[in-house]
Image (cartoon, rainbow, N blue to C red):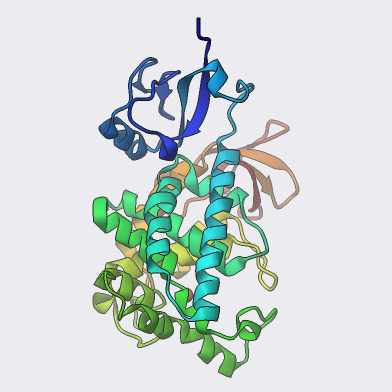
Length: 356
Ligand SMILES: [Fe+2]
């Protein structure tokens, strides 16, 4: 008689007809699919919408290489998938730099088939924190912005083709940087005023690279052109006011700032997601769309409860609670059992996220 084992696989790799090997449970503990359910196209789509990244599938023993053991490591699965997509982004961006061609179909496929899966994963923003690396900054930043744009888009109620186009706009937002000389793009240290002006051209150059392509939507074009425009008309390339900025560009602007600030770069020390939330609240409210900011901040706050963080006095602590108002500092419990309300202890800050 055939022996059966459960094998953990990505929801993106599921095909109709497979049998669920273990009940699928959401983060909140709700069972959404019972053991023995046979997958249909609509069930697979629903798993994606629920934000489930992987499930156990029942398979005959001899069709799998080895039984799975130990607890699943969702973060590792996320990281593996992420690295594969970075390689695809690198290839596409290098084609644009060296061959002056835009492989739009490949980029669309990456955005639709792969990036959206990462965006839908429960804890996507936390996982992104753990795949940060110094190399390949432009490619990683493009992918991160696409994932964050997808997460934010979902919180804002985007779905279907709108969501796919929004994620594509996030992936392509800095595509014009492939037309900026590498010595300026990768310069460690401050750019000269002339170099800064050249760098700012990545918005219009990106727009020009894409605008003639068949099948590109206005939203994607304006997301690329306007992601550095600001509500108070202080942005570039034109300096248009908020009402003339496309919603995609406003969403990408928030994702772009969040990722740039939480990434390690040679010339700019990264700050923790908590500091970014503070910064977005205090300094960017007149520059970024307040509604988009509020949705982002409110949801991000929920994300960080349970994280293990490092405090500025060197102690590790768990985030227990973050108040409802945007920009609030959390209550934490240190490893030695002390409860600290960071709203009252302004001398202490969170300097690093150690575990999510
Ligand atoms: Fe940019």
